[in-house]
Image (cartoon, rainbow, N blue to C red; front, side):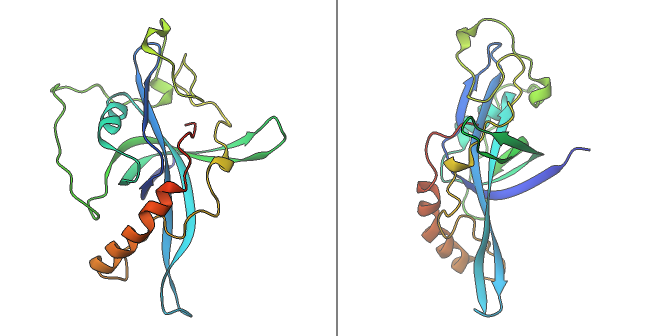
Length: 205
Protein backbone atom coordinates (compact mmCIF):
# COMPACT_ATOMS: atom_id res chain seq x y z
CA UNK A 1 0.00 0.00 0.00
CA UNK A 2 1.27 3.47 -0.87
CA UNK A 3 1.24 6.06 1.89
CA UNK A 4 0.25 9.51 0.62
CA UNK A 5 1.23 12.48 2.76
CA UNK A 6 0.63 16.23 2.55
CA UNK A 7 3.06 18.51 4.39
CA UNK A 8 3.09 22.28 4.92
CA UNK A 9 6.38 23.92 5.84
CA UNK A 10 9.54 25.77 4.85
CA UNK A 11 11.97 25.03 2.03
CA UNK A 12 15.23 24.76 3.99
CA UNK A 13 17.69 24.43 1.07
CA UNK A 14 17.90 25.67 -2.48
CA UNK A 15 16.18 23.40 -5.00
CA UNK A 16 18.80 21.28 -6.80
CA UNK A 17 17.80 20.67 -10.41
CA UNK A 18 19.86 18.29 -12.54
CA UNK A 19 19.41 15.98 -15.52
CA UNK A 20 19.81 12.22 -15.64
CA UNK A 21 21.84 10.73 -18.50
CA UNK A 22 18.71 10.49 -20.64
CA UNK A 23 17.80 14.11 -19.98
CA UNK A 24 15.19 13.29 -17.32
CA UNK A 25 14.85 16.32 -14.99
CA UNK A 26 15.32 15.47 -11.32
CA UNK A 27 15.16 17.96 -8.45
CA UNK A 28 14.92 17.96 -4.70
CA UNK A 29 15.18 19.98 -1.52
CA UNK A 30 15.01 19.67 2.25
CA UNK A 31 11.82 20.74 3.98
CA UNK A 32 11.00 21.37 7.63
CA UNK A 33 7.64 21.54 9.36
CA UNK A 34 6.86 22.30 13.01
CA UNK A 35 3.51 21.56 14.60
CA UNK A 36 1.73 24.16 16.71
CA UNK A 37 -0.06 22.98 19.84
CA UNK A 38 -1.99 24.69 22.59
CA UNK A 39 -0.23 24.72 25.97
CA UNK A 40 -2.81 24.86 28.75
CA UNK A 41 -0.24 25.86 31.37
CA UNK A 42 1.06 28.73 29.26
CA UNK A 43 -2.45 29.45 27.98
CA UNK A 44 -1.12 29.93 24.49
CA UNK A 45 0.15 28.28 21.33
CA UNK A 46 3.70 26.91 21.39
CA UNK A 47 5.99 25.09 18.97
CA UNK A 48 5.99 21.32 18.98
CA UNK A 49 8.28 18.85 17.25
CA UNK A 50 10.07 19.85 14.05
CA UNK A 51 10.00 17.20 11.32
CA UNK A 52 12.43 17.16 8.40
CA UNK A 53 11.78 15.69 4.96
CA UNK A 54 13.82 15.12 1.82
CA UNK A 55 11.60 15.95 -1.16
CA UNK A 56 12.29 14.51 -4.64
CA UNK A 57 10.59 15.50 -7.90
CA UNK A 58 10.81 14.24 -11.47
CA UNK A 59 10.03 15.33 -15.04
CA UNK A 60 7.92 18.49 -15.50
CA UNK A 61 7.33 18.88 -11.78
CA UNK A 62 11.09 18.95 -11.21
CA UNK A 63 11.58 21.62 -13.87
CA UNK A 64 8.72 23.79 -12.66
CA UNK A 65 9.81 23.53 -9.03
CA UNK A 66 13.35 24.52 -9.95
CA UNK A 67 12.03 27.68 -11.61
CA UNK A 68 9.47 28.53 -8.94
CA UNK A 69 10.55 27.44 -5.47
CA UNK A 70 13.33 29.10 -3.50
CA UNK A 71 14.96 28.56 -0.14
CA UNK A 72 12.78 30.07 2.59
CA UNK A 73 9.49 29.71 0.70
CA UNK A 74 6.39 28.39 2.42
CA UNK A 75 5.14 25.39 0.43
CA UNK A 76 2.66 22.53 0.44
CA UNK A 77 3.92 19.16 -0.83
CA UNK A 78 1.86 16.04 -1.52
CA UNK A 79 3.46 12.73 -2.43
CA UNK A 80 4.44 9.21 -1.51
CA UNK A 81 6.06 8.76 1.88
CA UNK A 82 9.15 6.57 2.15
CA UNK A 83 10.99 5.83 5.38
CA UNK A 84 14.44 4.31 4.96
CA UNK A 85 17.03 3.08 7.45
CA UNK A 86 20.59 4.26 6.79
CA UNK A 87 24.07 3.52 8.09
CA UNK A 88 27.41 5.25 7.67
CA UNK A 89 30.97 3.85 7.44
CA UNK A 90 31.72 5.10 10.95
CA UNK A 91 28.95 2.95 12.39
CA UNK A 92 26.20 5.53 12.79
CA UNK A 93 22.65 4.50 11.91
CA UNK A 94 19.36 6.29 11.58
CA UNK A 95 16.21 6.75 9.55
CA UNK A 96 15.51 9.14 6.69
CA UNK A 97 12.04 10.38 5.81
CA UNK A 98 11.50 11.08 2.12
CA UNK A 99 8.64 12.31 -0.05
CA UNK A 100 8.41 11.43 -3.75
CA UNK A 101 6.32 14.46 -4.66
CA UNK A 102 3.28 14.18 -6.91
CA UNK A 103 2.67 17.92 -6.64
CA UNK A 104 4.11 20.94 -4.85
CA UNK A 105 3.36 24.63 -4.68
CA UNK A 106 3.45 27.77 -2.59
CA UNK A 107 1.29 28.02 0.52
CA UNK A 108 -0.96 30.96 -0.33
CA UNK A 109 -1.85 31.47 3.32
CA UNK A 110 1.45 33.35 3.59
CA UNK A 111 1.79 35.15 0.26
CA UNK A 112 0.74 35.47 -3.36
CA UNK A 113 1.84 33.77 -6.57
CA UNK A 114 1.25 34.30 -10.29
CA UNK A 115 0.54 31.07 -12.15
CA UNK A 116 2.01 30.66 -15.63
CA UNK A 117 0.97 27.69 -17.73
CA UNK A 118 3.62 25.54 -19.42
CA UNK A 119 4.17 26.51 -23.05
CA UNK A 120 3.37 22.96 -24.19
CA UNK A 121 -0.33 22.13 -24.27
CA UNK A 122 0.45 18.54 -23.38
CA UNK A 123 2.85 17.95 -20.53
CA UNK A 124 4.52 14.62 -20.04
CA UNK A 125 2.88 12.55 -17.32
CA UNK A 126 4.65 12.76 -13.99
CA UNK A 127 6.84 9.84 -13.09
CA UNK A 128 8.39 8.80 -9.85
CA UNK A 129 11.65 6.91 -9.42
CA UNK A 130 10.18 3.61 -10.61
CA UNK A 131 9.37 5.14 -14.01
CA UNK A 132 12.48 7.26 -14.32
CA UNK A 133 14.59 5.20 -16.71
CA UNK A 134 17.77 7.05 -17.58
CA UNK A 135 20.21 5.61 -20.07
CA UNK A 136 22.58 7.10 -22.60
CA UNK A 137 25.64 9.32 -22.47
CA UNK A 138 26.46 11.56 -19.51
CA UNK A 139 26.51 14.67 -21.64
CA UNK A 140 23.48 16.02 -19.83
CA UNK A 141 25.43 16.26 -16.59
CA UNK A 142 25.63 14.33 -13.36
CA UNK A 143 22.58 13.34 -11.40
CA UNK A 144 22.32 14.42 -7.76
CA UNK A 145 24.10 12.56 -4.99
CA UNK A 146 22.11 9.56 -3.88
CA UNK A 147 20.23 9.07 -7.17
CA UNK A 148 20.95 6.06 -9.37
CA UNK A 149 21.83 7.46 -12.84
CA UNK A 150 20.57 4.27 -14.48
CA UNK A 151 17.08 4.31 -12.98
CA UNK A 152 16.51 7.60 -11.21
CA UNK A 153 15.93 5.58 -8.02
CA UNK A 154 17.05 7.10 -4.72
CA UNK A 155 19.74 5.06 -3.00
CA UNK A 156 19.00 3.86 0.49
CA UNK A 157 20.76 5.58 3.33
CA UNK A 158 21.84 8.73 1.52
CA UNK A 159 20.41 11.17 4.03
CA UNK A 160 22.54 12.14 6.99
CA UNK A 161 20.47 13.54 9.84
CA UNK A 162 23.58 15.28 11.17
CA UNK A 163 23.17 17.71 8.28
CA UNK A 164 19.83 18.70 9.77
CA UNK A 165 19.96 20.46 13.14
CA UNK A 166 17.79 18.51 15.56
CA UNK A 167 17.93 21.40 18.01
CA UNK A 168 17.30 23.93 15.27
CA UNK A 169 15.46 27.22 15.56
CA UNK A 170 12.47 27.64 17.80
CA UNK A 171 10.06 28.29 14.96
CA UNK A 172 10.11 26.46 11.65
CA UNK A 173 6.50 26.04 10.71
CA UNK A 174 4.13 27.99 12.98
CA UNK A 175 0.49 27.20 12.52
CA UNK A 176 -2.00 30.03 12.33
CA UNK A 177 -4.70 27.93 13.99
CA UNK A 178 -6.03 29.52 17.17
CA UNK A 179 -4.63 32.95 16.34
CA UNK A 180 -5.51 35.80 14.05
CA UNK A 181 -3.90 35.92 10.62
CA UNK A 182 -1.93 38.98 11.69
CA UNK A 183 -0.56 37.32 14.81
CA UNK A 184 0.39 34.20 12.87
CA UNK A 185 2.07 36.25 10.16
CA UNK A 186 4.14 38.19 12.70
CA UNK A 187 5.19 34.96 14.38
CA UNK A 188 6.08 33.40 11.04
CA UNK A 189 8.23 36.37 10.04
CA UNK A 190 10.12 36.23 13.31
CA UNK A 191 11.13 32.60 12.86
CA UNK A 192 11.57 32.26 9.11
CA UNK A 193 15.10 33.60 8.82
CA UNK A 194 16.34 31.50 11.72
CA UNK A 195 14.75 28.35 10.33
CA UNK A 196 16.31 28.75 6.92
CA UNK A 197 19.71 29.90 8.17
CA UNK A 198 20.03 26.87 10.43
CA UNK A 199 19.95 24.41 7.51
CA UNK A 200 23.29 23.87 5.70
CA UNK A 201 23.42 24.68 2.00
CA UNK A 202 24.93 21.38 0.86
CA UNK A 203 22.51 18.61 1.73
CA UNK A 204 22.27 15.56 -0.54
CA UNK A 205 18.86 14.54 -1.74
